[in-house]
Image (cartoon, helix red, strand yellow):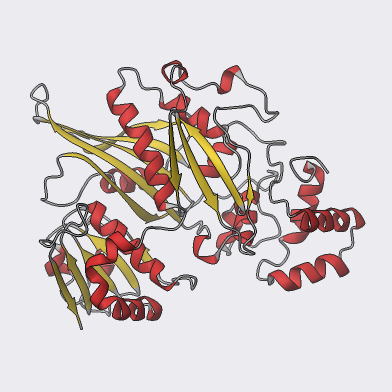
Length: 433
């Protein structure tokens, strides 16, 4: 056993045997591990693994470039407004990441506000969109084996499979959905034909960490917009040097001179402190010239520390809804169709996630979209009046939805609550049948 965890060969054996039954409870899994394992070497390693309470496994062996990056994010997209094409993907980082046409269309339409609110300046929000994952390579050491292709878990890497088995149920990864964290900037610019500069930086990921990735995008995007020669490829190299997102760890992740501290809770409640990663390093732990951050970043020191949560914030989004909190809890628990109408994508996305988290530690089993637009492929299905509304929670900003979703039984209309939560002028209009 190495300091980082299991040896690579034993990790493969461990997972081949461990993933045979994904539905097994933790108790029965441990019992089977200690009593019925046909491999004594695996048995010994599992005993050591449980006794030492180690959750850091060496996943760096036999991994290709950017594999560690994919543990955290899918890619970083830059979406701009083209006078001829409309919203279009300008660039994708790192190079080599291939997005399907449907992914490009989804990211383009979800990267800009879908309302007449005129979001001037900088706006941050996030979305959750249906994702069709590529079929993993059967020969890849990272692919989940002995799982049928009909199972969504088939499309998870071994690391993400391990993460799902040890994280809180409310924080598990759904491979059929992708999260996007948007930093949108709109400012007047007379040098442009349209008269406005409109562009978004989007970080896409499978991990459901709204607070963490909002903070991460809030660090990356201003650097991209304000620096004369931004190097997003170098930022990807920094993220590629981060440790794996394993449950039960508190880690410090360095990005652009900022250290973001993140705690990922484990299902058994045991956490340990991980090694701070303040700069990009090679798998062996020694500096690597190919993994070094951009030159403009090297002059920065770790002068700022941020603390991020994996669970979303509840008080600020729900403060104006406190008189109805029990009713909202019941709606989430029973999976009733709910639509949240707000004046900005920031407001609706944070409120939708807060509503879904109300029933924690129970898992919300229905679908939810923090930010939904008229361009979504499921728009016609959700607005159809010939069938009952689906079990889903939607966040929208386009006034058109007031008519399109008028037949939905539960509608929450709120004013923008980005400002002071104690502001007595804050308004709430609630329509719940």
